[in-house]
Length: 73
Image 1 (cartoon, rainbow, N blue to C red):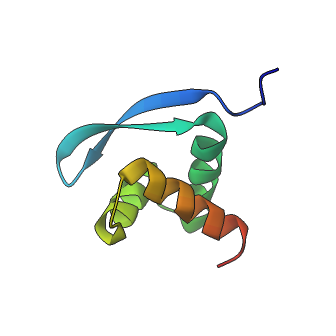
Image 2: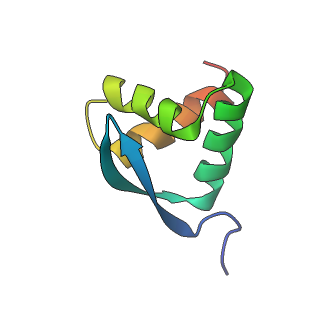
Image 3: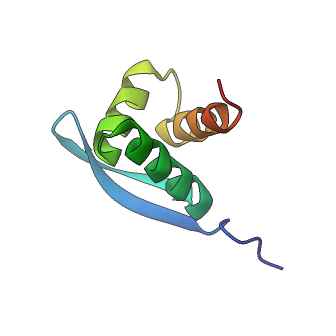
């Protein structure tokens, strides 16, 4: 059984002028895009903001950020 949205998607992004790739489950990509749209910013800009405040792995930091948004924090 496959859980909808659990498929890992690798996407290329640019952070501070450097190309990198991020692997996240499709459900996290969708939520992250929604947050960016709600804030009136680009997905890359939002990921740059997350990147500046992270302490560990970028993919993990994005997941924690999305979770916090969904919890209203």
